[in-house]
Length: 122
Image (tube, rainbow, N blue to C red; front, side, top):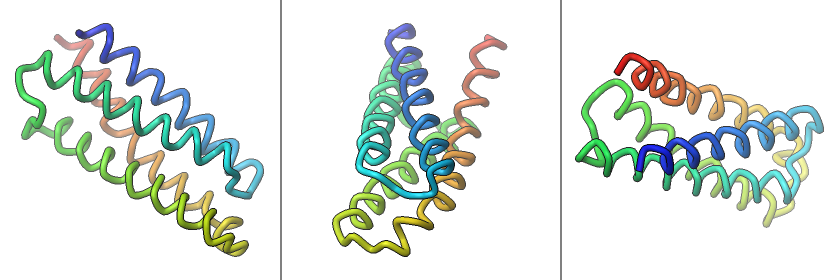
């Protein structure tokens, strides 16, 4: 279960990082970024669920557990909002969305890094 969780979390990291940074470099939200946002969200959710099952509870009231839940909720909101922006074809928001993406990615890194630190210390 640990290996499954780690692989999905690592996959989320790769997908989300590629999507966020390529969007920032291109300075325009595109459909393929959105697809990677959703795939990253799905991978993170599956990986977090696997880790939670392994730990014996899905929601942990710890720094890592709380920041992890905040990150998943933010990823869901981020992906949903990106979907809305692309569906509405709002050029101004499409060109500024990368700023929001970068903030969400930085917040997402907190539980990613704390999980690695916690895992190594065990």
